[in-house]
Amino acid sequence: MLKPILSFFIIFRLVTEIAIAQTNDYAIREVKGGLFIPWEMVEAPDGTIWFTQRHGALSRLDPVSGQLKQLIFETQVVSQGEGGMLGLDLHPNFPATPDVYCVYNYNNSSGNYRQKLVVYTYNIAADTLIYKNTIVDNITSNSIHNGSRLLIANNKLFVSIGDAANQALPQNITSLNGKILRYNLDGSIPGDNPISGSPVWSWGHRNPQGFTMMGNKMVSSEHGPNNDDEINIIESGRNYGWPTVQGYCNTPAEMVFCNDSNVYEPAIAWTPTLAVCGIAFNTHPLFPQWQNKLLMTTLKDQTLYILGFNTSQDSVVAVDTVTDLKYGRLRDVLVTTNGKIYISTSNSGSVSNKLDKILEIYDPTPTGFQETSAAGRQWQVTPIPATTTLVIEGNHPTAAILELIDMNGRVAASQKVSGSRHVLDISALPGGVYLLRIREEGRQPILLKVQKQ
Image: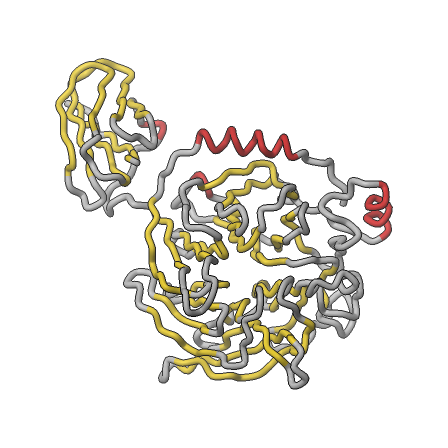
């Protein structure tokens, strides 16, 4: 599938224009700190977050209280370079079917660094995980390029495997490296896989480190070398080009290979690279500016990206960024059923120096308050975010009471005004998100969210 080349300059201009218009209609809090590279997060049916840490821990986190329970510490795990305890997912019928799937790196009996996909059973009574069985092991690994994201979709188990820094493997369909693999949930190989008797679903991958469903489409984020980080739409039996093709099919040699080898071009590619990582597709309306968009964390760029697709969902047409996540390298992103967004960081240099966190992005509107819809607004507030003053302008002169309400529902500031333009001094207020309530006699109050830096 050949596409026109999207130049870096067009992407840069698009990012710049959108970022300027963004308003910060959210708040961020630390849920848990003192962690060692929380690598993959999944939501359990009870609303808790299950996650791996690269040194071998698989834990459960209550995102409300911050209470952490380590469910197992896998002693076989060897955290070498980028390796360790990595991909994670829960059985779709969890906990009735208490299977927990995990990928990790280890040393085999010959001392070679390898990768395996195992299943644990959750023992509800003991509140622990117990080893059940191994689906596949002895996969070639390295200190880099291990892939290792897990995704259960349509009752099948998908796992991304990197090329283990060996460029001869991704185009070799007898090797599991540089592939997306597909298994039945019991570990057997589905009969409708593209290669009979093989778990290989797609090939030509370098280091895919993000995995999600976008409606009925499977999406992966993939690290490029010094160029062409990619977002790919994953389809059965397709070739994604590596190492012959980097990014789009835009050189004569690449074009020949793409036509001959059924190559699927990326939905978008970045040069210079961002070190793309975890992705999640957000369908929840809690943050309408991010609804039906792909969220993506980055390591090198240390930024959360918001990607909008075209109607056929095969090309990225809008790029936005969340600019105030100043927490270093961002490893994974999770959107929960209630619309809250969780981010994990990736900054720890060693187990003895655990610097990482799980953060929550949430709607800070107090319960019972709802911002007035755009159609019902007769007032505008600028700037957002503000530092010392808010300028409040209406479309008609009137007497009104302006009230700033904090996130605990308390009135933090109040002022009686008349006219159509007012300036409210907020220099003495602490930073955060507030609701501005405008009360005019004979009219319904108007509620608008504002933010003070």
